[in-house]
Length: 417
Length: 120
Image (cartoon, rainbow over all chains, first blue to last red; front, top):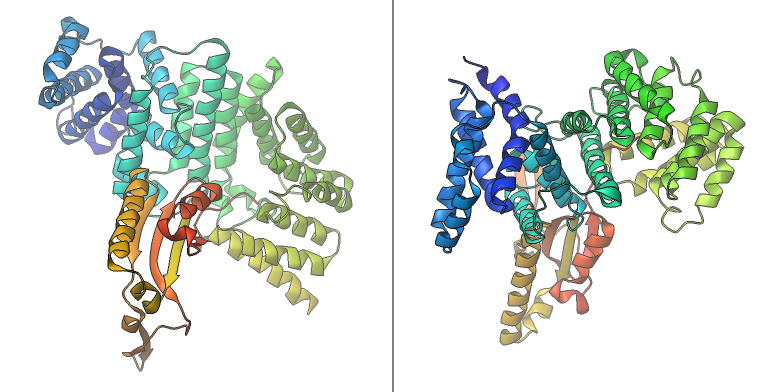
């Protein structure tokens, strides 16, 4: 059987977390296991396109275990560690590993994901480690996706592994409130990966993996493992419903197209349908979390044929619920201000923004200035809107956003002059 | 978030420093560079040659036309620059404040524009 390089890559990325999780469960020593499983994946990438083994997962675990032992032998404290490994290895498993992943393997993979999103790690370390250990991306691919040198990314991953190993990698899943907390961190990491991919457009798509596609793949996988969790479902729906607009968000020259001006024929209807099905299934269950609410808002936007035809009262209601049920977040308030403006007129929206302006973090923030510019323009105050657009353009660090905001300012001053 | 961090100086200022202090200062800067390369936040650290070596290059009739620089006539010039990639501005400010020279000379910090765009 000759699966070709693409088929092999997909298969390897699917198996990567299972193999690493199996190794960690067996041997502990996260950083050594991670090295060994990466080496096994590389070996597979070279040989499998010619000949796929009968039991790919077993092949990887066997090869990775051998590499692990080679590594351990070459270390100083080899005698003790070899003994540990020999004791920990059920010989039968190494020779004939199970053909299919069992529920225990699912738990292992989940524990691996929880470990990569360990609270001792910074967000960027959690992201890098998750992409490598669970996503099966190479260090070079992750470095390219974030636009940093490979050596820098290698250093981050190495430190993250050391932190996770030092904290004692937990192969059992947390329970109760700890589980809820840790799962929240996992969802946050997946959402950050998605947002990074959704926004970044650097590099060559052939070599730089799309992080939003990767985030959707990982969240889909998590949803398969935890189908009853409303927030996992909500996050998957939110990603699908947001990503569905990707083709319409930018022009060929890279310039931004705001929601109001997007060509809605270019939205991905299959993805919208899947997202709506997912979110519609969980909302009636009650106890609705922030990802479900944001998915519901995205769904209302996606269902509208035009900006004017959008069900703004419903969006406003959802933002009010989001603000009531989650910790205070000025960006949620910003979004609510826009919805208020669409329902009750721009002046009502501007009043909410005036309250936000008292917040030190927000008063000079480009998002607040850009939103105020938009509402001031709706209210008919062109000069003030232009000034806000210009100030927002100076305060963003995103190049496409700066160009967009500067163009808005020029449009207004041009029409005035 | 990527940042450009810069320190400034001039020949007189560097020349006024005793040799042993100079060696010690370089040692502290090397230690800083190692520390933040180790955290995966320092992408690169570069010291610049003296301002007398700066050139201004234009193209005239398709040919390079070179004159002595620098572009701006100032008392102090950029002495070294550092590329950072860190979580947020607070973190960049903390790293800048940890620069060995930061207790005597200010460190200039600029955000670098990136291609990411947020949902407007």
